[in-house]
Image (cartoon, rainbow, N blue to C red; front, side, top):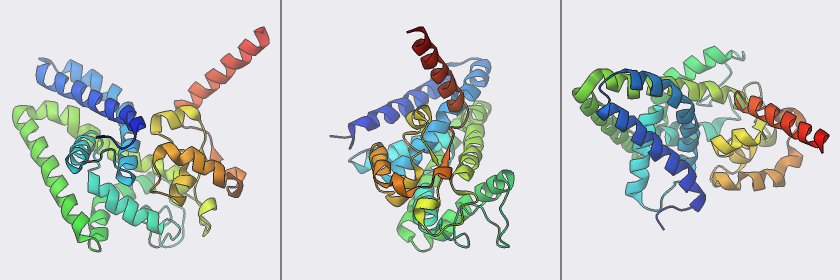
Length: 277
């Protein structure tokens, strides 16, 4: 079977659907208005794809190499984070060092020991994301070479699209790529900031909101993810059940907007139904 886990048809289908809409509007729109309308509307969905891109790098979607490379190219064009950037900066960097802020590639603490603000963290980690990926790549030349290949291929595709129509390429691809790279880092501030711990069960915040975890493919089970980062995202709730007695209560947070709003509306609707029954 081409796909390792049947449940991955869910993110794969959405990724390809978004790509299809992007290309359809890019090639067949005679006006910029469809691009200017679709681009901001698609940012939220592409934000979910940032999470799925992350999951794919820990547990590839496909059983064959060419399919994994192709989906990585597509997700890189959608999110601004090419395949091996996740592997080097995140898997071989952050996951190994998140308990040590002097080494963490996504450090939320300054060398002087001060907790960064969200804005400071976002700009510093984003601007240094690719340089740090290359730095980690010095220890892993195989992945560094793949990162270079992925960047060159992405630049080639963007170059071709720019040759066809540079303004459409800027609106449909380049601006979202830059924006979502920043937003990906912005969201990770909530995962660890302020948790200077040696125990991995106490070093990560979690979100149990079901709508959040539906759209991010269980990114909210973040302690479980760090305990066993090679586990498929669909298995994280089960792993969480096994370790939740070790996670302090203050490490659970409400889902971010709009998921928290959807959950509150759902809860009020359920309560209203109970009152009527």
